[in-house]
Length: 356
Length: 122
Image (cartoon, rainbow over all chains, first blue to last red; front, side):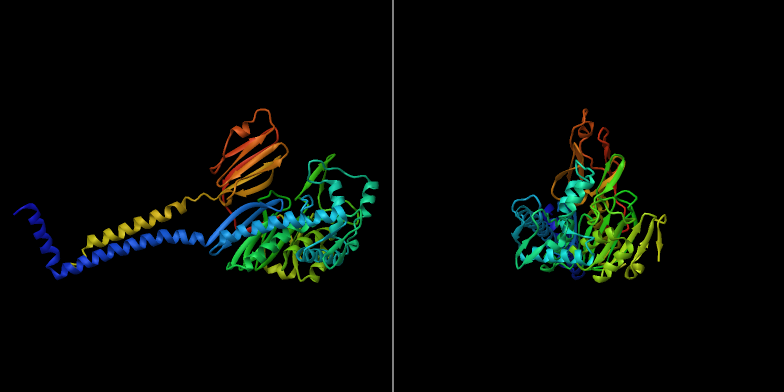
C-alpha cells in the first residue's frame, strides 16, 4: 500500500468507523474549544475588569489630587472631574486668572457671580457667622501679607496688621441676587475651601454617572462615595506618610487643618499659615491638627479651618451645629474624638493618647 | 481507566490549563506599586504613587529644584546646584532607587507600597 493510503486506512479505522472513538474525537475537539474559550475569556476578563476600576494621580486646585473610581467609564469620569475642577478654578475661584469671578470681585469690589459660586459664598458666610468669625473669607490680604509657605514670608508689624485687620469682616460681603459686593479694601478668598469645593464637584459629577463607588482627594480633602473606607489621619508630628490613626467612615467628606501643612521659619521661629481673623496672626489654640467629617465638601474644609482656630471646646460646639464630627489633636499629644466617631477610630501611634 | 479518556489526556489538559492561568496572572504578581517619597531638609514633603500617574507633570518641592513625574518613574529635571549630579542621576523607577540634590537638601526615594488604609487625610 502507498504511504498515503496507509495513513488513510489508519485514520478510517481509528476515527471514522469506530463509534467509541467518534465520541472521543468529538469530546477531544470540544475540550480544545473549551480550553481555548477559557483562556481567551481569562485574558479578556483581565482587560474588562481593569476597565471597571481606575486610579489616577493628578494636579488640581494647586495640590496633588488622587482618584480611585470603581465602575465602567471610570477613566472618563476621572477626566470629567479634572476638567470641571480646572474650569471652576480658572473661572470662579482663582485670585489671579482674569476670567475668574473672584478676581473680578477683588479688583472691582463688585461682580456678577454664578448661582453655584453664590451658593458657595453663602455657605462660607454661614460658617463665618456660626464660628463667630473664626473662619473669615475676607482674610486674604492678611494671608498675603504674611506669605507663610511662599518664597518671601515675613512678619508684618503691628501697625500693618491692625490696618489689614480693618478690612477683615465677612459681614461686609453683600449679596443681592447674583451681584456680590465687598468693601473697597477687602479681598475675598475662597481658596481656603477650594479643595472642599473640588470634592463637591467630584461628587456631583459622579452622581450624574453610573459610578457607584469612588474615593477622590484634593490634598487632604476627601470625598468618600458609595462604600465604607479606611481614612488614615496623618501624624502632625511625623512625616507626610506617617499615620497616627485610622477612621473607618461611610460616605461623606473629610478635611484636615494642621499646623504642619504650610510653614515658614522666620528668624528662627516657625509660623504656620492658618491666621486667626481676630488677631491677624497665626492661630494659637494648642491644636496640632483637626480632622472634620461631614456631608459636604466645602463645609468639611471650612469647618476644619474654623475648628483649628477655635480650639477643641468651641470647635466641638461648632461641629454640632452642622451635624459634623471630628478628631482634635493637641500639642500634648492628646486626641479627642467626637462621640459619633469613637467606635470608628483606631489609634496606630500609641505615643498619642485618646482622651474622653 | 475509561477507554475514552486516558489518564494521560486528563493530566495533559489540566497541565495546559494551569500553565495558561499562570501566564495570565504572572504580570499581576510582579506589578510594582511604587511610591516616591520626597524629602526636603530631612522631612517628608510629598508622597506620590507612581503607578497612578497618567499625565506627566513637574513641580518644585523646594526653591531652584524641579521634579518631573511620569507613570512609574520620577527624576530631578532641573536644579540650580553647581554639579547637577541629581539631574544626571536620571529616572528613578525601581524600589530602593534614591537620589538627592545635596546643596538644596532635596531627596527623592522610591519604595514599594504598604498601607492599612485606603486614603490619607492631612
